[in-house]
Structure formats: C-alpha cells, structure tokens
Image (cartoon, rainbow, N blue to C red):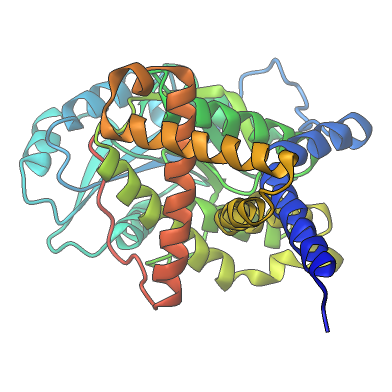
Length: 386
C-alpha cells in the first residue's frame, strides 16, 4: 500500500522532471552547445578565403498563387550580385490559379525560367520539377516570402569551399519585433551554436543551399528543408548556418493563420524525422544524434511537460513553494490569453508577445502530435500571407 507521503514524493518528482523537460530544450541545450563549442568548436575550412568564389548555381523558387508579391520577388532576385553566366533561376508555379504565371512571364528575364505545373501537386512536386531542370552543382532554394540582401547568394555558397559542408542555411529575419521575431532570433542563435559544434538540425525553408549530389527527390509530406539536412548528414557531410546570408520577411499578421502554418510545418517535420529515425542513434551519428534529440524530440515533448508541470504543482499547492509555482504558471497563461484576445496593453508588451508566442508554439506542437497520431499528413502546401 502506498501512503500519502510516497504519493507526494512521486508527484514532486514528476514536477521536477517536467520542469527539466521545459527548461533543458530551450535554455539548457544552448548552454551545452556553447560549452561544447568552446572545447571542440569547428569552423568551416575556407582555403583562399579572400579569393573570388562563384560556383555555378541553380536557384529554385516554388510559388503558388503569389501574385501579391511575385513581382517584388523577381526584382529582388534580379538584384542579387552574382555572375549571370553562373546562375540559373527557376520559378516553378505549382498550379497557380491567379496571375502569378502571367506576372512571371512579363517580368522574368535573363537567367530566369518559368516552369508550370498545370495542376497543383504540392511543394515536393514543385521542387522536383525544379531539380529536373537544374543544370548546376549547387542548388539554392528560396521562396516568395523572403527578400534577400544583394550579397546573400554569394555569401551562402562560399561555405562550400569546405569539402565537409553539404548544406548551408541562410538566416531569415523578421522585420517586426513581435513574438515570431524574438523566437526567430533565438533559433538563429541556436543554429550558429550547432554549426560550431557539428551541424544544424534544420535549415531555413525560405533560403538554403545544398550540393546537387546530396539532393535526392523530395517526398511530399516531408519538410524539404529538414529532409535536406537529414540527407546531408546521413551521407557524411555537415549542414551549417551562414550568418552573412541574410533575408528579411514580415511576420504573419493573422494569428490563426500563423497557428495553422505551424501545425502544418510540424506535421511535415515529424513525418521527416520518423522517416529518418536512424539519425537518433548516437552510436552511428554521434553528437548530431544528441542535437536531434535535444532540438527536435525534446522540444516537441515540451507541451506534455507543461501540462504535467501545471497539474503536479496544483496538486501540491498545500506547499507554499508549489503554490507559488502554480500561480506563476497560471498568470503566464492568463497573459497569453489576454494577448490573444487583443487587449492591446498586454498584446503590445514584451511579456505579452513572449507569453502568446510560446503558448501558441506549444499548442501547435500538441495539435500536430494529435493529428499525426490520427494519421493526418500535410500533403499540400499553402504559402503564408505575410
């Protein structure tokens, strides 16, 4: 028979396990990366680093119903400072039903080519169509939502001087100062730390590059940027982040649309990870497996830890300490709800932005797990309207 004191101790243990499950993926993991980087940090080898380096590049830009911003994307791409005789730009329309194709035909010139898929087939099919037409050894993937700095293309490919590097992620920055922007800056910091230790675990879907030899056909339903990193590391190469390859995006204005986008992205990420679950073996993949477990698996476990932390602390509220922990959690979620409801004083404050975005991210993870368990797979893509 289990007495009351034993039950209390078990609940206390569950509480502290859940706290660790929240704190480690977000705070502990970056600290571990920083420590490892101090002792075993590595930089990409760039022989003759000051010499011009312009490998031949095929840039693939999938689009679907992007008439509102395609002209700006075309102009931004044309403004990239890169030798035209070494650059091929492929716009791939995935069954667009608006004026996207018309605008590309009018505005595209020089190195730009339009590929039309008459029926919408999904982002994977659009990328594969681009692969079929790509002529060069370096592939760069971008989308219509990001505005690249003029030297970003030159900067993103220079890391391929290092023969160990197979995939390079650009850094997409959010122009505004909301929760998405703060979270984005945090993710960029983690990627830089991961690059120094070994490899990033996921590239920016808006802007990244990969060696053609490492890029197989994209599979619909699997996150392409994540899949590219997994394939790169599986074949013995590293995937890194390039701080000087910068692009700017605006945040998603509609909170509901942002939430739905995250759920879709998470489902595709989960499908990719489960398809490549072998990378979670430390015996085969060493430190990269630890990065995957910390950055992906444990991060995706945080919603369950948050629920357990709240329930266990409430069950222990007879203790002043656990009463305090309960109040802190409840106040945090109230702030998030008030920000979500549109109360401007809370919504526009830094605590409100952080509470809302953190809560929304973890709610999206929870919904994604439920849908994934139900067999839902995200086969088609819907570009977010930013």
